[in-house]
Image 1 (cartoon, rainbow, N blue to C red):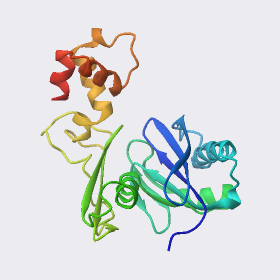
Image 2: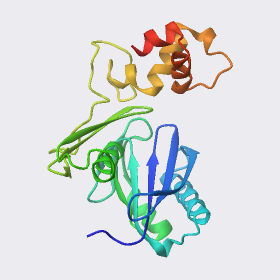
Image 3: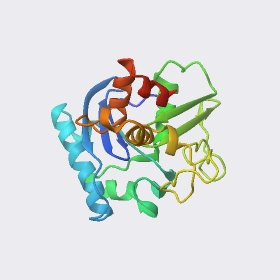
Image 4: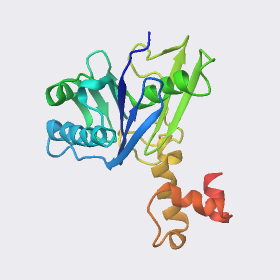
Length: 234
């Protein structure tokens, strides 16, 4: 049964946080983007910054906290979704036991669903996207890192350890590029947005000088027919 009311989704990425206000049908009403807060000031300050951004989003949409039917937070790491505790988030926190759901509850009076971001993306695609008639699917996300959510029988499949679908930290090159997770040669060190830009800087830095330091710049060059950018993406 679909709950009536608005929802907020918060996508915590390695470099930026995206927030969206949605209606009960999944239609996006308002969005906002902010740089990912630093964890240096502590977990409460980190969550507090997300809450402030969420309050601003609701104000833009003329929606109150009391009108929310749900709040979801996706993070790029391993989460015990039953308790909302972030256990491992190599691109942000490292190995922690961060009680994110409890901190949101303390700050807003609302307990969110906290899950791995790629799980959230996969389920949203299953429910609202083009694959809603497909009970078994994979959804691969490419950003600061690489994520993958698995849907089996119309439900998110987490696996015995809650890490099913983890592609980003699968080593593909023996002794390859060092990764923030402590391994070398991980997939996301080669094909994530961050990796694409860093390799472009190694191969053709002169073409990137003065342009925004992000993967989109490399793709813009590729769309314009630049041979070096096309070769890197290929």
